[in-house]
Length: 230
Image (cartoon, rainbow, N blue to C red; front, side, top):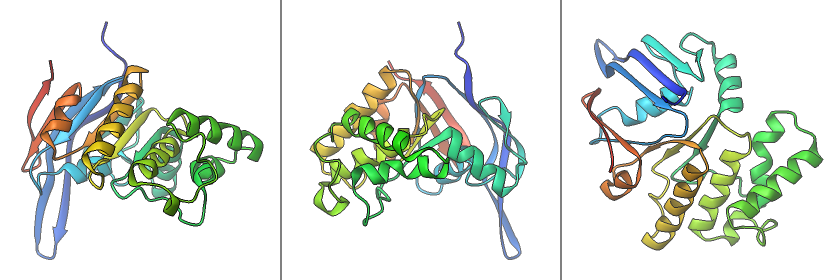
């Protein structure tokens, strides 16, 4: 039985204008990622990876074509509506963690819940449970500067899970980590995938791509290869 489609690009082009010159960062791209899939977006610098992640993450919109997120056409939503969808449906994990240095672990995890208007008691309960889920149950009151890089990324993952997202999106999530910490984070992604989470990860690392269920390789704004591992 075919999995429910979580994200779908239908003949999407993204054009940027640089003065008198325009170029297509994405050029007539169509693809779909099903519920529970773990997909790696790969390719050389300038191939369109970041543009694709920005579109999939509702940080930008296509010039032409459609983007369906959980069956909703978000292609033409205005900035406020895109922001609402982003906060409700997506979780983001960044290479540089993007934690708030003045907040401790549990408070950082609570940030998305605050913007959703959750009750503080409910937010705290969710955040503590997520800290424990990513192995930081004994570090909930530590500030980011008191944590290793791998631990900070675990906070980032917990924060991304706080809103129970349809899709988890990761941009080079191990790029700032040593190899051991990176492997621990990738093992956590494997665990989340095993629990049914839909994951889309941008990476330049072939070893990381090999761990994903599927590799979508871009070149010059087009899908050059779309294959399943194993």
